[in-house]
Amino acid sequence: MISIEKFGLKEVINASGRMTILGVSKVSERVMEAQRFGGEHFFEMSELMIRTGEYLANLLKTEDAQVVSSASAGIAQSVAAIIGKGDSYHVYHPYTSRITKRQIVIPKGHNVDYGTPVEVMIQQGGGTVVEAGYANMCSAEHVASMLTEQTAAILYIKSHHTVQKSMLSVTEAAKVAKKHQVPLIVDAAAEEDLFKYSQAGADLVIYSGAKAIEGPSAGLVAGKKNYVEWVRLQSKGIGRSMKIGKDNVLGFTQAVEDYLAHGSESGEAMKQRLRPFITAVNQMDGLKAKIVQDSAGRDIFRGSVKVTGKKSAKEVIAELKKENPAIYTREYQANNGIIEFDVRSVNEQERDRISQRLKEIME
Image (cartoon, rainbow, N blue to C red):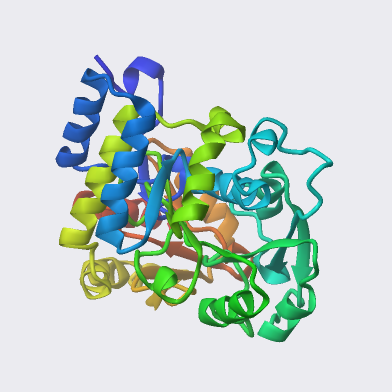
């Protein structure tokens, strides 16, 4: 029998969002049923990957798709695929000196750490990082100026982790890629729209299975058929160490189907659930709360709490984590005295426990 007590684990209230360090998302009964079906049956795995890929591609209106173990694996395998172009020697010798066209051009402000640096995944795929533009600005011209005969692809990271100001759009990056006849890979791991980046001209788009889609640990690479086939071929190469089980392949496929049918919680619903929390916090000395939208412009709203009392935001964050249940928040603006609370995975009872714990800490 599985229980928190069995392993001596702390209970966690996840007010930080869909974060890998906390296991990302909860899955639905339908997804668990699909995982159970996968766990109880055998398949020809190569055929399972092709058929689920075809099924997902049809749902997403792309030429083909491949389920992988994570969005990070999707970056590494996509880079390797574009560099190798289906060559069998490359599959077994991914870092061979025979192939020199390895440069992956990425806006400088996109080479971020999201739990590991983006450049680690590029290098794992055998790519050489070439940064375009500056930390606070990258235009289409900046990207174009870095393209050479050794450029294998352009990589665009669509994420709240990246610099948002003065950055070219995916559509602008796609125009540069098309003009110079190089593929565009878009990492859209946590994005909620599963259509817009392919429609904007990306050749490969990568999603996380466990973030917006609320599936099990998985990732998806969707796009042009020949590129996806090269990604699939990587299961015999670097993808072997990143393989995904049949249970998660089927669970993820079900999660995509459910996500497209029912969508995710709207920003308006999040705001409505946040209002009692904001009211309660604003009655506490040393805290000032308001509702803010996600910095990357997604339809996600969070509680933003400014710590103005004797304790610092970092001290409050540490105390929230210390007790059982541990309360995890978004800490990106702690240096500015701000703590953000994401309620997507928080129920009403947990929300009230957060309010009570904040009150205890501030008193």
